[in-house]
Image 1: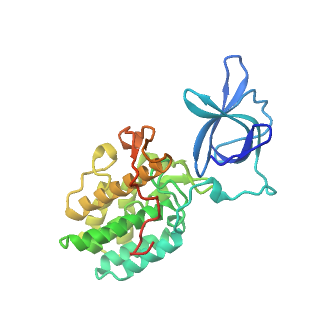
Image 2: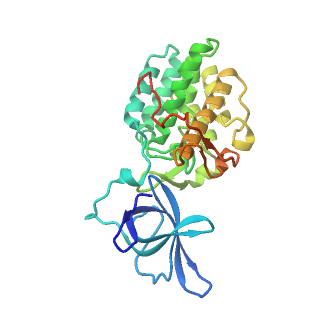
Image 3: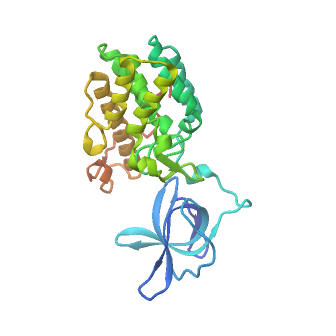
Length: 323
């Protein structure tokens, strides 16, 4: 994490409180059990003998001072001083939260132009209506609570990544209906703007009640159905889009309502998993040196990952043939 070293051996800096809970120690004293984070990662932290002075809560930006210690083989921050950030403090939000390399507005424009060129008028009308209505959230939302693309603008970045790969796949396999696959790719996670709740930092802080009970796959299909009805659109395209959305997680164990049952739905599910996996591997391995292993990654079947010396430096996705 990006701390400043002080002359007395301590460190300080600005962080976000990803978790903040008051707890009781064995001796009866109160302490704060924290998870602090910046764009480089997160760490467990403790403020012992908390007097109750000050209000601290999840998603708050604070300035802390203390020491990094070892606990059960992992770094833990022992807080000696903490206060909420104020308007006079000098820090950049982009230093505290992960932000995508390319802005959501730019990526939204790229995708919008692709859809404007569709020959299938039904797909064009449904997709443009939905993304225009949800534009404000689509360009800013993260794609997840903790895992892949959990960054400001991550949802649009993830979506644009899948669309770029889908374009290449369609050139190799001409039996794939390009406009159908791209429509499913653009809309597959649109309901995450409804499922996730974001905080002051723009990152997801949890799921809405409706998001927990229904989920973005089912809600995404509902959005397509409602949009088609409002536009007076009927036909197979509507059913195909709904199926692609409710099946894109592949199997019921991962949240799919049904398994994908036609070519474009199968390809979308595979590309969604591929993009998430590449992001997770890059994020994990860029934290270790060459010829070293990462810690076990529970999101990747609890595997340790090896960073070989031929690894390419992590860089942004090559959208539309440009770095």
